[in-house]
Amino acid sequence: RGQKSTIRAIFDSVTTGLKAHVNIETHYIDLIDYRVSFCKGCLNCFETGSCPLDSQDDMLSIKKMILAADVALIGTPIYAGNVTAQMKLLLDRLAYWMHLMCLCGKPTAFVTSSCGNGVNYVKTYLTSILRFLGGREISFQNYIVFSSDDWKAAENVSKMNELIADILGVFNDPMRIGEKERKDLEYVFHAMQRNIRIYEDEPNFEYHFWKKHGFFEYSSYMDVILESKQILSSIEKEM
Image (tube, rainbow, N blue to C red):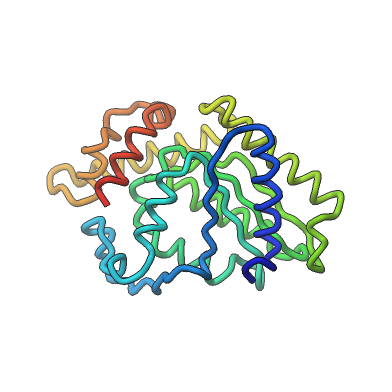
């Protein structure tokens, strides 16, 4: 819905609140404004780390913006009990990142808007995907809206203030992470470490990626987060 979007209004309010406390640069990606082609299921991204569609649409620039961000704020309305078609399309095109844990602990907050239905399902869905992408969830806020101005309701304003505080907390302490979040990321990281190591005798792209970025050498995902800026910069340059 462009400028009329509830998610856009919430994002604008949150970024204004953040800029009152810290000097930050923000970049808003509205998937409606970008060309993102449907995944064809060719598996080339899993096998080579490259999607042939990236040279035909805007997905490569979106990937680079995601990798370059210090904090990712991801928003979607909930339609028919799920994320929007545009959000699902984006996640489909990032599916191979779920084997690479490309986000390296990047602080990520989720914002959804709904009339109340589908919130738990969407939260579980997005949180699970983020774990395998390697991101670190710092906040999940759902805003109940029935009309265009409901995002301004006192309850929703309170949630926006909580979201601002959660993001500021990461700026103040870059290694900030909840105990459950840490345990979940460690579980996924070590499971993927074991699974990718299986290809040691016949290395595939995923094995080479993990080897090149030292993921086999880390005993804890917290070590990956400590080195995340260097790793993310290297991944972005390889694209």
